[in-house]
Length: 208
Image (cartoon, rainbow, N blue to C red; front, top):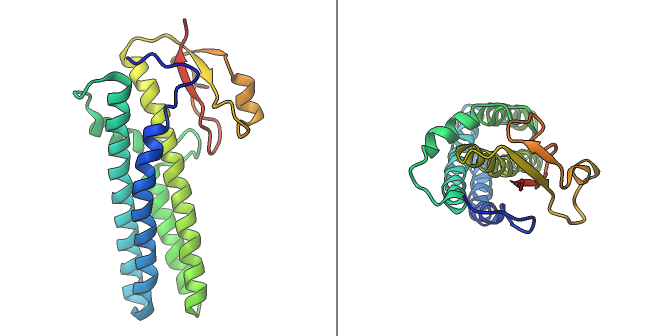
């Protein structure tokens, strides 16, 4: 396993991959807004459903790419049952958001359809679509951050690591709660060993 240090950027791969896939997500929501100009209520529901099916598929593809590249960077192996692990991980509630990824995406889809059916003009509809897109992107980006942390912990499990050191990014964005954990040692199976809030970018290195 790679010997991480406090200066390691475990999110570098994630950031590059997310940047690419984010463009596809934004483009798909834009297409939804354009398509609804000519659709009636029945077809609007189908369009919203298809849009969310598409963006969830795009994000799952993104998560697979992050997982594959990050796991190889961390451990140098390609025989880890990554797809099976990832699907199982996505079916568990997030320790940060407290919901399952696809279940929450489905709730966002339902809320968007209800919202666009309650408005009477295209500018208000666009506003609702943009809002739904914003919330979906927030969910997607947080899940991709959580994924890196989960992969890091899983890789440490696979390498029989027993104790790890909590590391922050040591920048102006570090919150007080995470700053208080900087340098603390935790057992690898500690229930406290995960991100504690949205946009948390903390990580863990092997304790000496």
